Length: 357
Ligand code: KG4
Ligand code: ZN
Image 1 (cartoon, rainbow, N blue to C red):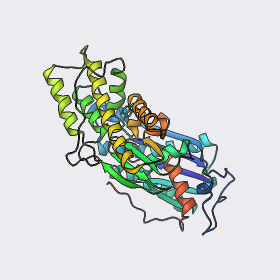
Image 2: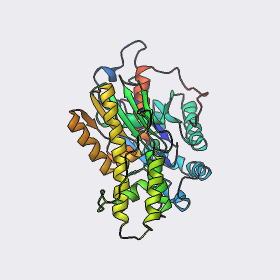
Image 3: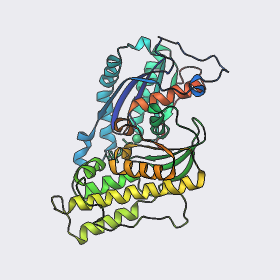
Image 4: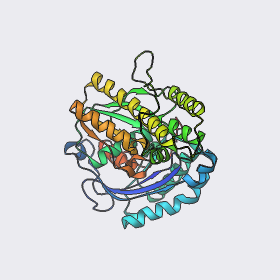
């Protein structure tokens, strides 16, 4: 069974074609008779990613130091047809071979979401194929299973993106219990804001990682923030204020020789804050495996600290390859295939709506 998936929740236009674990045996194959156990959940195997095209809008938003929602939706409109065409052509299939359509419903920028949703609804309606709407955050978590389908449950998952920083307990496939989330800025947002303040460009995470690579992370002192009630929630606004104070007190600017040390220190404390919370959550829920996902999971320092903790705790840890950490449609297609195998929908749901939060 082949799925065509589209992701337009923020500032990446992405389309992917995936074949379900059973293989790519043509239109409408692989649909489970209702009531049978989903095959993918009996013996987990990964779908095959036949194409995963991602067009970033970074250049459009960079001059503003952050995503401009109206420009994002207009850019999606301009590029979506070509991106979907490229995904089909790289996969070597036409729309007539697609058995299932998948699209991100939310959360995200409402205008951007509506572009992808309307586009895919139109295709599903015209070709009379089922349509599965998926949650962007659940799709990020699914990215881990795409490369490692046999991850042992219960799974403790840390999702770190530009808009979200959350911890989930997954007791079984497709089950998500929120254990904690940020009370103010997301981790990626904090990185983006400090980079913007220093005039380093957008998105901030990759540029901070690049410029801070040779820096000494112990140069600038930061304290790991703790929520007063010792819950599993995160808070990054205090760290951001502390970073702004260092910048002012030391007169740090864009071309300063101390910048690598400062950026390494800031990136290091963000990573430590995230991993400390994973440690507390792991103590509380005793998972069998750990997963890390979302755009910030591309960060080498965070990946290393996360793996160090997992080794120390004797837990299996999985982080997607970098391309599957940032927004992409392959993770959307993978989640849609799993959802559809579990609970095949009645057909094209034209009432499917986008949600911003
Ligand atoms: O998941 P994502 O692509 O989009 C959202 O759903 O938000 O995440 C984007 C975020 C941005 O804040 C960006 O600065 C951050 O991921 N990011 C990184 C790296 N690459 C992207 N943060 C740290 N290090 C990176 N290498
Ligand atoms: Zn995302």
